[in-house]
Length: 157
Image (cartoon, rainbow, N blue to C red; front, side):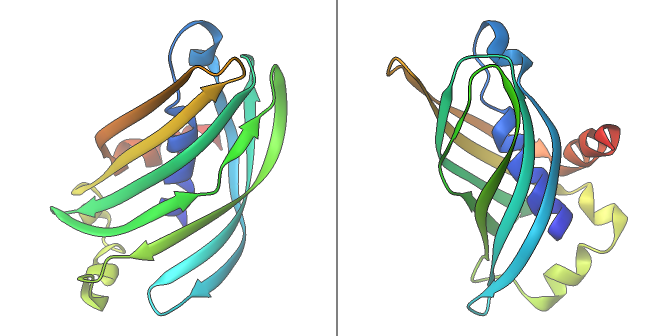
């Protein structure tokens, strides 16, 4: 579950694409530094995410991802807003929260251990990016295969 959260956050950050060097923004690494329970069905996370941003300064907000497996929503991940500094490689300490859906059972969570179950998991991602001049854009990626995200993360290691 921890890996799914980190991958989801990494993809949300990379999803902000548009023109020029914005397409070249890369997440070099993502690490969970701290996990704390949030109620009975949630987890607060402290993440360290290294981002290579050759583009302009971008303020990211409204970052949200829904993790779905076999057509059932497992939960939602939200990340606190932050600003990526222009033309830099920097590690950002981000706060995120994953909350499991009301209908998720213990059986659903145990199924995540099965490698074949990951093939049936997808992520819907929404990120709002605002450039320094005020131009903003909301990017939405639907049904991104979780298996693809895990392969992406394995290449980074």
